[in-house]
Length: 103
Image (cartoon, rainbow, N blue to C red; front, side, top):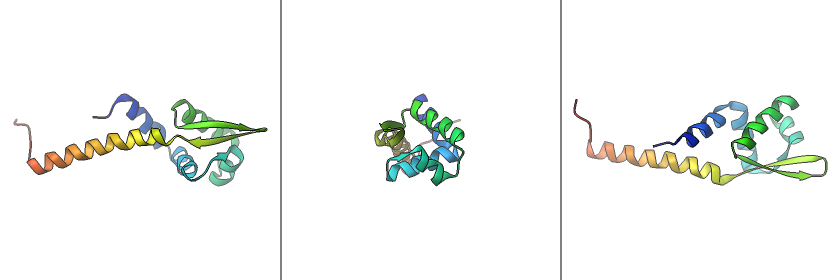
């Protein structure tokens, strides 16, 4: 069963812009300037979304001169993927055994 941590992470990733950011960061470490250019988001809007992703533990920051680079923490997504894999496994077992609760 999903925990409250998992549901909070799902809420964070459910936002279309944050999901786009996570998708971009899965392929390379990017600074705010790159993310603004790739997403078309305003700087202030992007900064707010990055704060949410940082606080949720989805991304790490790496200062580089006057820029801040962001990198995805894959272990966070692994945890979420494991939760869904567990649910899928339970659903398969239920379907195969025909297990159902009597009314």
